[in-house]
Amino acid sequence: MSLAGLRKGLAKAARLLDELRAEREREREEAKAVRATGGTLKLYDFVKAAWHILEPDNPYRDNWHIGAICEHLEAVTALEIKNLIINIPPRHAKSLLVSVFWFAWVWTLNPYSRWVFSSYGENLAHRDAVKCRDVITSNWYQRQWGDKFKLRGDQYAKEKIQNDCQGFRIATTVAGRALGEGGSYFVVDDPLKVEDAESPVTRQKVIDWWTGTTVTRSSGDPRTFRRVVVMQRLHEHDLSGYLVAEIGGYEHLVFPVEYEPRRYWFMGSSLAKPKDAIIPTKVQQRSITARDPRHDEGELLWGAQFDRATVDALKKELRHRAAGQLQQRPADPEGAIFRRAKFRSFTMEARSDGLYFVLQTADDKAVSIPVSACRFFQCADTAVKIKKRNDYTAVCSAFLAPGGYLLIYDVCQFKIESPHLTKFIRSMKYGPTRWDQTSLNPVRVGKWPAKVFKQWVEDASSGSTVIQTAAVEAAPLGRLSAAGDKVEKAIPLATMYESDRVFHLAGASWRNDFEEELVAFPNTAHDDRTDAAGMCGRVATEDRALRLGLAALEEVAEDYPEFTAWKAKEEAEEKARNAEQERMRAEALAAVGMDDPKKKRKPKPEDDDEDKPEPKSYKINVAGGDLEIPND
Image (cartoon, rainbow, N blue to C red; front, top):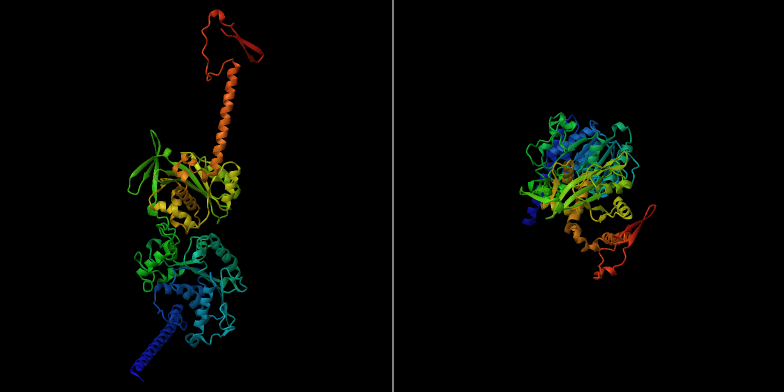
């Protein structure tokens, strides 16, 4: 044997020896853990011991969040918790812990248990099923618990793993076939794809699937039915948000990748509860090891696996989704697309020469603009139904001022059914309007400081009906294309904010809610006011007639066919009115025997008195007879 071959053989032998030593060390740790727990291996220790089976090239890096998740899953197993939600960043071992190791561990204690696992994609559901089989069939697992049960059926089946104790594990998808079997554990791991998070239709399908499926999935005593949802936050109204806000009864375990002390809130605290509060679970209240041990702002969740450079790169890559996926709050408190730091205000001031807008600019200067120099317009984002989860109809009323400033004067939203939308929008044109849900009529509550130049409605769904109805009623509305997604259509307005050209009316009652919605966009449950404001941004940057003023309409008449028809009609009617006035005037003068003074009179000849004609008298028809008036 050559020297090179000998060295190669020695290196291989050294690697095998290291692996054997590692295996012996794991066995010693397992035995120690079993003795410490009275003969039962804790889930946390099971995870550490089994990690090498599935991640041979990724050495186990311990962290507090792994132990915290294990403690909560043990509490679910023991029925201390029946409903659990875990919100955790991607790539933090959530699927391995919840969908693989937990199941394999429970079968060492209770091989009779039945499980249903679901995910948004078939590939993910099958991936974790294969990993479960790899753990169970491993020499390590069989050596410890091989006498507990035997696998039966197709050894390579992905949809269903069964054992000889009548236990099973089913893998399915959220949008997959209907389940014919139930279980005592129902686990959903990532029910919503990241790309679908901004689709209200897809989000609602997931919620409808959950509410229509889980209530019928218990295969035995419903009192022992356990439900676990593990996911990264993608939207304010994703499945996790829906269950917490509208259903309740779930323990909520939250792991932000960067520590935010302000979010941690305890029951009975004298401090106000933040909207994105993290409240300790019942397990965290009794167990110190399950609590977040971090203290410093921005401290990382799993620094050994995801260091600062990695997290910063993820934040740049995820952009506006980073707040949800990394921090487990769908909205960045400072805003992603619309940044809170860019919100400016304006006031109104009455002066001797009229009403003025006073803008507080980014450099803390006051800019005064007369209201008469601005164009006032409105944009409406219409909805169809008025149920709790349906969107609102929102109207944004704004001024476009010289210099390209957009001054948002009023923002309102109401639940209005489609048949009543036209009359509400028509009423908004003439003054601030509120909707009376009892009488189903608009109620005007004031006056606008200027005449509305034009109203725009998006040409989609109920908006198309409103546009058509208004056209039939000879009160045409501007038509805005519905092409593009929400974020794309919001870009013009976001650009105006970034260039410090958007201002909100100071002290307005709607301002706080509107700004919170802007900051949360596009991950808020309802973004109708933002959509309406976004339409104003599109109109302000794209509509030439609005930007140039009324005088410019004739120059861009091809963009406004309704204006061309209206102008021709107005000119014809004005001509007819003028002709009718002239006719009536001529008749009145003729009735008193007077010529039209506008007609050019001929000069009188210089005749002698004897040649003058006899004086004439004039008769005027009056009630009761003729009245004769001498011409003296």
